[in-house]
Image (cartoon, rainbow over all chains, first blue to last red):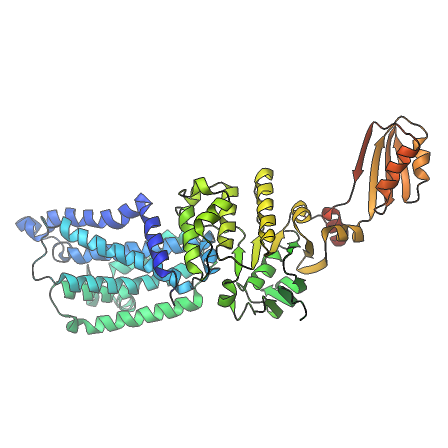
Length: 249
Length: 306
């Protein structure tokens, strides 16, 4: 049913790695941010970090995870728009490759890089931001990948709205960074002004933050079934909507 | 059993908004021929081709390709056709070898990728990234991809646009090679020379409508029967001798440079025989025979480059 999926995924993975800047941005930047901020403000920094914002001291792993998700989103939107503009998508669709196979291959590449980056982050931060033994890493990885899939589905919708590849980065950033700002990571969603509060409730990142934070700090999945349900519903909505409005050429 | 055409297009129409891209287009393509759809940019060539390939659906009309309806059976059709798209690209950093292998992996009965790369003269570019290939090499790769599934029918859309004459000739040889393997080729071009040299039959399309269909020579014969012979000679009796020939309409003399105009395929033979018979000494001799370019101009009232 998904003929060519593994071949294409493996190929796109190799092609992605051939562009050093992309890999640095995707992998090295989040890991470096984690190490540097962790050193300055993490639990091991002791009393110096008192007064540091909560997102940097307590929620640094969540913050860096979100950076990974959003960089995957921006990268996906850019790749899709470039592929569309230069006719690559059209060329691939004129083969037995199905449209969803092409998009799935890109999502898989992003998920793989997210998982690798997370692993490197945990290892690189060992000295300054030791991950407590009670942090359920496997659960957290699952939660992160799950959130990434939902948010990447949003990327397909954004890619449909962006007119040309040149606008992909600015337009996607215009959506991504405000979404990060009101996601509840920096300021509790409840204390936002009503308009922003409503916007935050309508965006997937808010639920991703709640889920990731909960899982990292030891709350079980059962405490966050609501977040999981909303993210899953949004995934279905984004995918369904993209399937209708997505432009291949 | 009656011989069924490979492609049968009947009265298709396709509009984009208020623009009519293709209007009441009908033609048939026979097995084993190179069939060209020729016309200027924007005439509806690519739209017509993409409807036949199943990439677009016509608003009206019927298409049958290898007995299949491309709008309904596009996936079954894709196994049996090879496609090269106009202005297509691949991933910048995909290797030639990887692209051919990917394509081969997508079909049930693929050709051997290595042999295909060799046959298209890309052997030493096997590990080169797509972005480093020249225009001609990219087009050869796209031909390789179009042949990866050993298709019965190959579509080539503006294959040599933007290539230098040498690369263009090399591509023409490859296309003739495809036909030699018993495949049918459907191509579009706005280059009349390409159509004339490559195609067994052409359909001329302008503003979304088919103007005429036939073998290039037949179209020239039908629409532009006039011939011109230009002779340079010092023999002063020559103009009179030429005027006496049955197919000659006019002879003009500009200081020994005679322009002999007439009609019909016999004109050139008559002129040569006349020279021999009257032992006229000739300094220069050439003929001007109309081409598809002239046919296009005559049929549409504008040149193909307008």
